[in-house]
Each structure stands twice: as C-alpha cells, then as structure tokens.
Length: 249
Image 1 (cartoon, one colour):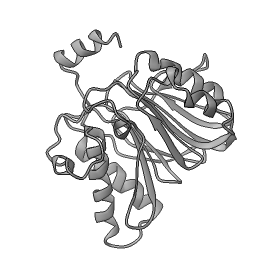
Image 2 (cartoon, rainbow, N blue to C red):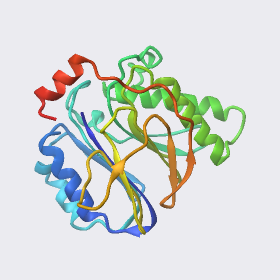
Image 3 (spheres, rainbow, N blue to C red):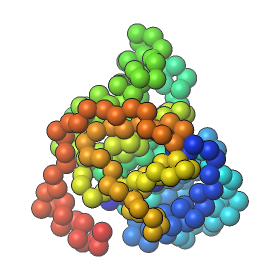
C-alpha cells in the first residue's frame, strides 16, 4: 500500500526523471515520503507532490550510485515524520543499515517488544528494530563477511515472511538487498547504468517482475547473491483486497 524505489549503480547516474516519475505516484500515496541519497536521509509526513522541500532537492540532486525512495499510504501508524520511511540504524559493528518497506506485519509476535523502543508507531519500524537485533546477534561471533551478512538478511526475511507482506529493501552501505512476496508488486530492469527496482515501472522501457519469495542482493549495479526460494508467499485475504479496492490501488 506504499511504493518503493531503489537503485544500485555501476556508476553515478542521473536519476532525476526516475525520481520525479516515482514521486508523482504520491497522488495515491499521500501520507509521507522519504529518500536515502548522498548517504543521508530526508523525509516528510506530507504528500510528495505537495512538498516544498522535495522539488528543491530534485532540481539540484547530483548523480547517485545508490538510492532508496518511499511514498507512504498509512495503514498502521499515524501520519508523522517518525513513521515515514526510510528507517536507519547502526549495528554494533558500526555499519549503518537502511530499510524501506511496503506491507503489513500481521504475524508480529517477535516485534511487539519494540513498541517502547521505537520512535514512531508503525509495524515497519518494529520489524526494522527486530532486524537490527538479529544482525547484532549474528555479530556477537565476530565481524561478518559479505556473504555472511547476506545470509543473515536472507534468514531474517525467510523467518518473518510467513503471513506477512514483506516487499522491502535493505541497504548496508555496500549491498542493496531486495525481496517481495506478493505477486505483481515489484518490478526491475537492468541497464548499462545499473539495476532499477520499483513498485511500478517508471518509464516505457522493459521492466520485468522481480522474482518472488527470495532475497537478491546487488552491488555496483550487478547481482552478487541470490537466496533460496521460500514458501512464505503472501496470499491476500478478502479484507486485504477490499481495502485496496477502497483506496483505488
């Protein structure tokens, strides 16, 4: 019920047109926007097409090697800045992780304990805090290799995918991890610039559906790791479909 955009580049690339196309979708996703670029995060609890700040950024943003962007339709959590994505936090090794998520955590028994620790009140932030703890637990044995980081991310997602909608992206400063478990909700394309991932195609070129129910990691615009397929595919309920119809999504 939100939209995601991510880019992993082979080189720094002008993403202005992609970002303008992406944020134009906020007409249907009016409850906030956010972006990771230049290593920092900016976000607001306003409709992106009505933001005074966003056009200033897009008119002067320099080419980027990695980027995450999000537009929000609030289903869990109030409309406030703390509930806008991306969420970002540093693990015990000093590595900063950033997450954007489109979905709902219906089976959240392992995330309820983060109610008091979170800054906002979304299920997405609780999921992210749970992930950081999982990563910190893995780091108790020592610094992880790149492959071990990927395996930790993949295992966390596999464990949390059943009964939950987990269309999300993580970025760790080097790798972009992407996952979806609901059909027809995430697309991607590869070009000489790198890999683009978006909830909806953002131009007239050939976008294809992102693979279902497995984590794929990209680095410098190329796929570097692909996890095992899992069975935690999200099956929409009648109530979920009715909610989408009501929002004209």
